[in-house]
Length: 321
Image (cartoon, rainbow, N blue to C red; front, side, top):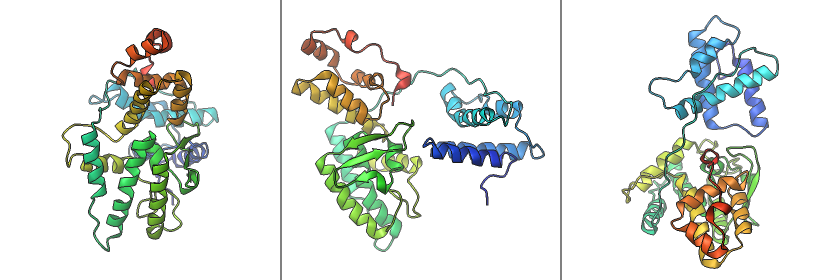
């Protein structure tokens, strides 16, 4: 039985199959599709054709919304309209969205003490004997967040990792599902590879023949809400600062850049390695992290005899992440 109820059901289902086959689908798109379907079923119960008014009304910026929030909520519907229009199934035009606002969030600069507190909380999660979900969480949490910390992997990439994506023999992760469509690979530190092997053996006893590397008790992948809630719960046990799980990715990048300073570096090579490992489509996206490293511009100029702005032009912040 279909999960959708409006007249758009066959179009939505076709759109979802297409996006999944192309490796360009995520949890948030799924949520928006369900909301749009309910909106159409409730407000246009007797309609059989998508209209401009339906789309424009849904995508119209609400009084409580910021520009970026409206854009994020509307992207999935814009993609649906474009999909249908390209196949001659609608004459509706993609709506005009509000202008994108610059991202002003500054990632948290972790201290060694904060990280020690956090991972101590991860390692000491209580596990109630005989309670499957509690035991599974205790096994997954310390490994999941250490993977974020040690590899710079995006939270969505870690959540959607399949067992077949992780080469435990060679310590290589194949990222097939990300924020874009580009597949890339991550080479793990030997200590992380060893930890993943131990984890895989332990979780297999609870979830044999699982599809996802970090499964739920029902065999599905972890949600973004689970990541955010779990991180916040454990972080707040011993730390007072405000941060988020995604900031571990920023920490990974900044730590790597700081290490270049001490080792004398082949700048271009190291920059390219970092960019590819983090799944950036181009080096331009990686340049953002220089702004997070105190004094890096002066050090770079000193070691290369080249002005910082000549090597690292102004960053396009809209390409970040």
